[in-house]
Image (cartoon, rainbow, N blue to C red):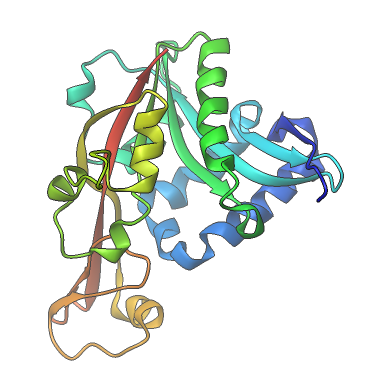
Length: 251
């Protein structure tokens, strides 16, 4: 079996790596492409990755010179208690990071960890968490905060996130694999952020994603979504409010 030789590089390393990272991220998140339609994502996400290219980490296979895992983040200035992190979660992190205020950034906010489909199950997602922690340490940040998108929550779309966070497996650990990975590496679960990613779009948008016509105003299940989409026929819109879970690492 061939041994993979891996290095960690930033998107700033080369134009080729930057483009390859974009391609990989698009591939990984294609099934959840509806999430790219939050106002914050559309307005700021691409600019953040370019403006802070030196902070966007790529795990690169030296043989193929291709990225196989990514960790994206944004620096922010935050001086309040962790418990005060807002319900707007991911969208807030992006909007805050896009503002260039006078105060120096003291917290690193993780935005996404992406692993190529044919490299999953090898511990690379967990490695990218460690790489983000190392980046925060080297950068002199006080903390790393993450609005976590629990990986198995889509299998339980009708369960409140507040309840889901409390689920335990047979060993008494966090039920959700991705939340568990963070806790194992020293994260503290802070609480839920109930409106972390908000997408409001016309019915036609959601009919395309869900693959059916809507006959009544009601919640509808969307593959890969953590909660149902609320469809309002009178307003001709569908509203998706994705809850995530704030976790934090002291650096």
